[in-house]
Image (cartoon, rainbow, N blue to C red; front, side, top):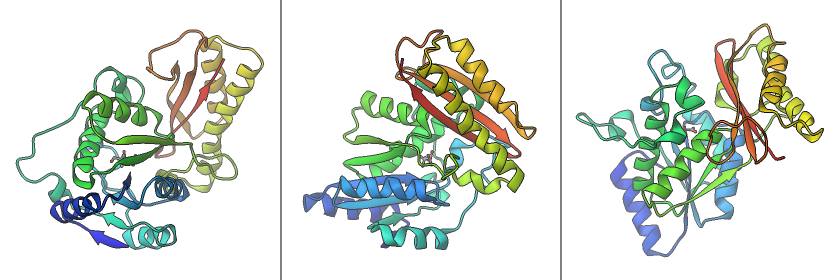
Length: 281
Ligand code: PAF
């Protein structure tokens, strides 16, 4: 597994692979890897000849006061976890390499990045799309794999790729969960034991709403209230949002008469966790 930390070297490697006719698969991450990330890498491996993983805690996608400084970082741990997966290159640029002095170019996707996390974390998606677009120019992947836990992020990136005619296939990978249902996240490390127990309420809320849909309920207000009621059982849980939206456009819906995504964000202690499920009528 080769470690590259400069843009020039990464681009040279990508160019060489492309000249050799090899398919490049890419998994962008912010490190502190868990099995969810490893699944994305395994998926990328099935779709390509060479796999690149980037590890970069991207400052532009954190608002002031968010957890950029304390976001967990441990490259040695990440390298050990990735070793058995067969990743070819780990790209680990420094902040100054990605955003040198004088940097002033940003990529911004419209409407679809406005609700949900876009409304609660102003500037977040502008940071995500900027860094992902730049990483695509550096790694030059044919295929890039993203997790569906960040459902809105996946839609925003798909929109960016379509709108800017980027020549890369975007693959979404299903959410990977702990055996008890908690969606895997690097931020789970912030949870105390009690908080971790209450964090399970997110996946329980999704399960309860799925049960109601299976039983025939279609009113968005009823489904969202049911999710809120489950989350409110947690003394340490503070709901950031619980919304049912069109699964493709993220427009508001009042009735589940087409696929919808139930998207949840909640603070559990200091950790802001997100989870979602797609509901089909
Ligand atoms: O999902 C993430 O970990 C990040 O948002 C990403 C896509 C690596 C961009 O920094």
